[in-house]
Amino acid sequence: MKENHILRVMCNIEKEDEQTIKIIRELVECLGNEMDIQFVPRKDLPPLPVNPFSKDETEKSRTSHYLLIVASIDIYTIVGRAENARKILCSLYNLVGEKLFKETRIEEVRRWLRHVENYYIPKSGCDRIPYYISKVNNFVMNIGGDLYTWGRKYTDIKELIDLIADKCNLGGPHSARKRVCLYMRWMVRSKPDLRIWDHLSPSELYLPLDRNVGYVLSELGVLNKNEKKYRWKHVEIATNFAKKLFPEDPVKVDYPFFLLGRWLKGKERIGKCEELAKAIFKWESGKNTFSNAVYL
Image (cartoon, rainbow, N blue to C red; front, side, top):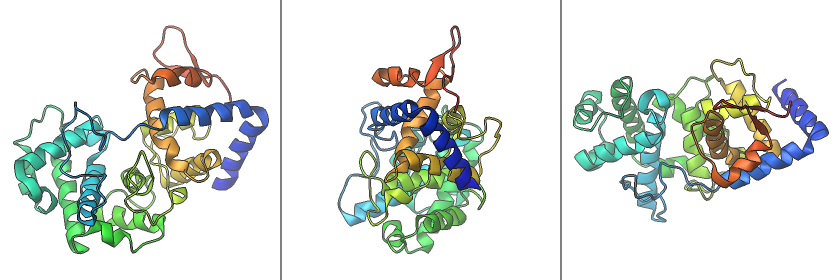
């Protein structure tokens, strides 16, 4: 039933407006070369405690571990804007060093957090950040301390998503498991992502479905605009749609759709790509939002 739904949406698009599909692909290409804020080298962001571009296997292990901690807290209700996850973890590393990767006691991590500038930490994050850091560290400790090597034993991406989500409490079996899907994107895709687990195929990845990506998909008619909470069934629908656009790299749409979702809400500039976006979404005069120009 899910696959039929996607085929129907795509067939309608391809039959009635092939130009729209062409523009969506061009828009993704235009926005798709941006490196993720969690590891992009940028002067206005703190330097990372790992080298995510290193070919050294020890450093790949540290990066794999660090990125899972990042992904575990990279959610609006915990850190607010995504770059705050980077700021918080880099501040903690500057405070405690390698203990950031080893501590499993929630109270100890909570104590560290009191010494970090907390003006960018939402109230709910003060409890949840220590919880997830402890959870991830406990998981990595239990698999022998080397997440990079452990992950290379698996060839099924969905199995890896389920294992990591279950062990780190990053969403139940029917949830969207956005944070783990995001982690897998960083670990498996090639540039501008990191391709640390290069034995896995990007064609098998699942779309990390957050509120901005979901907003774009609902505007395109792929997801229902009335959905209040995304579940795994919505991830499958969204991923199947993305596979029709980019069969070998469906998650290529993730960061472009994230930026586009923020642009649609008047919260992001997309520069030279704006004209392509306006060919799909029509500006409503006097408002900071865009409305669908093409009914799909």
